[in-house]
Image (cartoon, rainbow, N blue to C red; front, side):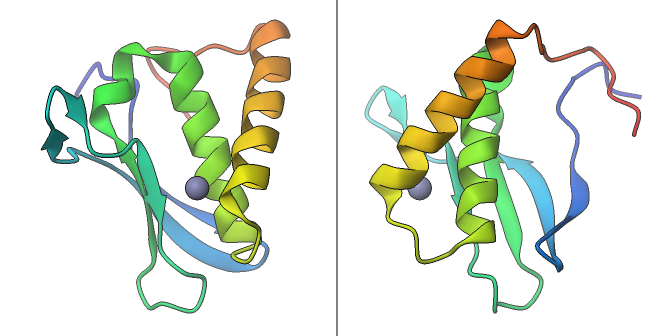
Length: 106
Ligand SMILES: [Zn+2]
């Protein structure tokens, strides 16, 4: 059993199911090309992909998971709205003490 706090899972957002998977996004120069992405709500076997490279940046990881879940919930919201709300919500949760644990049983 891995001691990584990151684990894939299958989750319902507004009545539709996405598989949340941690992936290695390609590098773009010295950085990763992206931190996360979400498949459209009407696509089959849809996934939310989160960059494995965020395992040591839990605050950003929280932000990115919220961000992609917001896209899943409302595909037509523009990215600036999604970015701002996910940053705001992550900031609140972080200030309230939410952290990434070693193991996260359901
Ligand atoms: Zn986005």
